[in-house]
View (cartoon, helix red, strand yellow):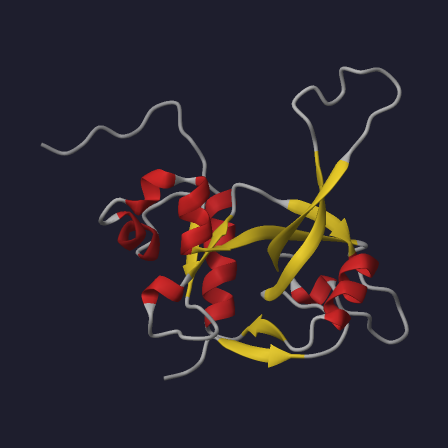
Length: 177
């Protein structure tokens, strides 16, 4: 069996990098209603890089194309069930695994890929944009960290693209009878 994750060290980033405990801004419900000064708290979340690897690479002495990196939260099934208790129902995770739950993508767990209860779920409905420099520094402190490898990386990237390329039509061709 081909492993879906490989361990990686260093400050370089690529699409599919699993970055634990990243700092993210958290906004209170009344954000923007308090005038000129606002307080923004920070939280820590596990994230996976969704920005294309080619945009994160510095080539021939130039800077990377992206100064900010797009990331989505990644959860253990247990963590996700704590936030969303209806996911504890029978059959729900199988729907996610088969790609039938919009905005969610399941990945095998890096430690025990054969145990589906150790799988991870990515929520494409939440996207964070964080500075490349912060993430590179943070990545260098996580040794080793997990990096999604081919063909699982392409499958992940395709799922992300499919979620954002959806087009709703005002009317559809009627069903055949």
